[in-house]
Length: 149
Image (spheres, rainbow, N blue to C red):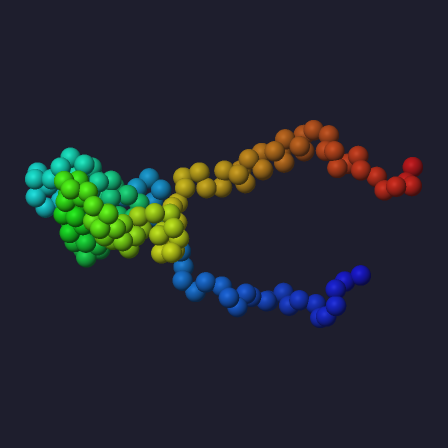
């Protein structure tokens, strides 16, 4: 026996769906054009490594000129942090990195997700298993109702 009330409409839609679409970032990182770090030869190798990490990150695919400017200004703070670490500098760096998607939580907040080259592998494997089952004796064919003999 069914539930109480009218049958659900086949055209029903959720009213609380997210109106903002998710941006899918390239899983392999950004390989397009990006500016060099101004005065890069004057920076510590750790700062240069930090910049190169951001430069090739998936988030860099969304960067506009203003985002690159922010990263260049932030490089100054990172450089100061390596010379004389302080929690105030680290806090400011973390805050700025959060605004450009530095952590998984930040990317969720920004509605960014990483595209995975292997998307759909699970469903491909399920299809392979189903095809293999069809060639063998399907255990569901052995099921019988009680009393049928």
